[in-house]
Image (cartoon, rainbow, N blue to C red; front, side, top):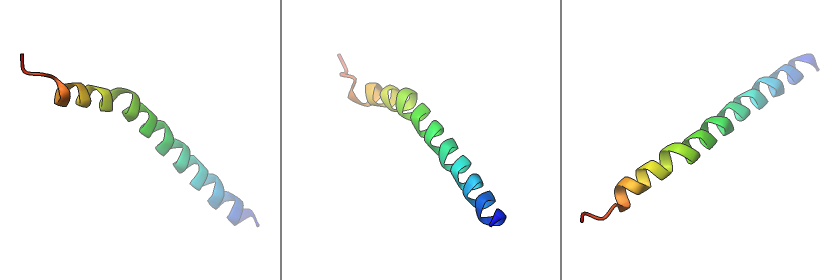
Length: 42
């Protein structure tokens, strides 16, 4: 039973890190790239 708990703990930490990284990209990188792509050439 201890091995299963350790597996799920490591998996949950991996998922949490992926969510944090994805949120950081969604809040910073995506708007910057969208503004560069959608910028008009006036």
